[in-house]
Length: 451
Image (cartoon, rainbow, N blue to C red; front, side, top):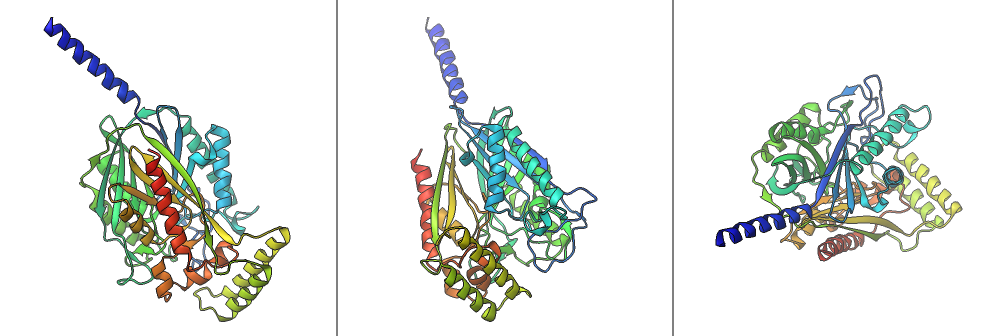
């Protein structure tokens, strides 16, 4: 009788454990090519000094879609594209296309771009009718959308999550070199199925700009090189979430394709063989979406203030852009035209997102935050593993740190001039860092508290 009861108890326990596994999270993943065709020559993004069209492909560009689902059927779609940047308007257009085709709520779709400067431009004159990038842009829209919808509507399966942390030497402060703030930490999340990596995510603060303006090759830069080595070593797919890289470049600055190969291999070597910690399965999936309004240098942006600022900037600013004065006048015309259409906001709205996956926090922000925000966020929650990704759901500004505003020299573009090129109505205030930092911390805190 006792033997029967023991066997019954074991059987019941196994049944309970099996039911618990059924309450865990599940995933679906897809990737697709978003490169140019062999006979296309396009305008590449990111370097004003680059004058010629692309002339080949170093590493094909990809779009990745990882969709997570909890026991209730709630889904979150995380996309990472091997692109430089896309505007908030373009990002919203693609996300809306995905939402309409899949039925997934728009605010449950997060679209990140790794910020490689060797990807085609997705805005400007080159994508207008007859432009060199027009056909590519239309294909890119469709490929990113179709790939995400396939993942959202695809077959889901359970996974085991594990995380690890390493240190790399490939990055450095791009404005202050040896003296400036730097974050060498690399975070990795691996999603395992049947004991083997299915998808791995690398999180690092470093501009993918090993290939400088002299390179005319399409590429995901060091990120794609690292992915090549890790895919061979680990198996499965690998993609990157570029962290708070606003002031972080490859240590030796932009060079040629050989430097991308060197940095990618160095980064992969620092990750292969790293120790991973298994994340206990809780079936926990939480998404928090926040907005924060960042202050400009003046409290009320008016047409008169814009005109005065433009005239002063064009006459006095030092810049690396040879046509800067002309660019300022073009900015002035565009911003003044907005006043004729209606009110122009006197603050810059930013969108922040916290995603909790079984207790591991993934934070997302639009724009280009400086690395200090990433370091401060992790220091504020030392008991948690925090992945930090910028360049999500659109690129609308650099976000210099308090340190950058204090130093200023070397940060003139980020503080005083970049609003001209992102078409913001005015430069951000030195009060911005505290406002943004508070938004980051509040978003992560609410994400944790929602557990």
